[in-house]
Amino acid sequence: MVNKLSVRLGVNIDHVATLRQVRGNTTVYPDLVNVMKLAIKGGADQITIHLREDRRHIQEFDVRNITRESTVDVNLEIGATDFMTKVALKYLPDWVCLVPEKRAELTTEGGLDLFKSEHRVRKLISQVQPRGMEVSLFIDPSLRQVEQAALLGADACEFHTGKWVLLKEKRAKAKEWKRLVDAARLCHDLGMRVHAGHGLDVEHVKKIKQLPYLVELNIGHSIICDSVEKGIEKSVKQMKSLL
Ligand code: PXP
Image (tube, rainbow, N blue to C red):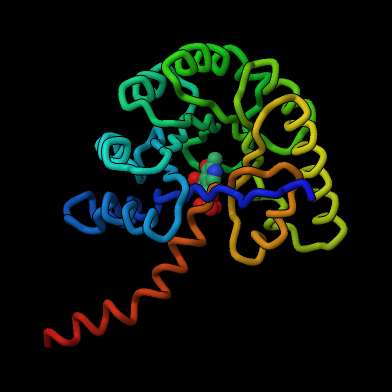
């Protein structure tokens, strides 16, 4: 057995902020800090938030509030820019996860290319690690990218599981799973932690937890959707009781 300890769960609460932002931040709900506290009560080992360049969900004040109030690790996902480096140095999350960003994308659609972004990533790592933050790099399960992550001094690779989740055809899915397994093994052999995330739901978690050396998953969308389904009956009852 490679994974003896239970896998850490980072709960990504970006989409709670999405619900607030679709009304232009004019409502006091949903209260992100309260949702964060409930997620921690449920067992979250970490709170993950992504401060996107276009601010479509998490805002800078959320980064301040979450880093201030969280009793578990905070993982801040950012693009490798000078502005985002300043944000990380100001709020000091426990982890910084570097992700690629394209303005028009629906979500983070692929991993970082650590060859194209080599200089920006190296610079950011050299600025945040001395301040006590650990750095994970969100990459596709490619051996070249894993080797480059080690050369850049990353503490962890977070493997993009989105492609594997979406594949339906059995052989193609098995091939992508093998890429994940090989990348995870190399990541561990090169002294980095193995993280994974994107698009994971309860079905895929049953399998992904078998990934060799996996220590952490970051999951958002499926948990937030599930919590709406589990909670709406109670919320409607409350409103109905007032009528
Ligand atoms: N990990 C990273 C680096 C991400 O960018 C995201 C999406 O914001 C996630 C994990 C979570 O993905 P999902 O919301 O699909 O569970």
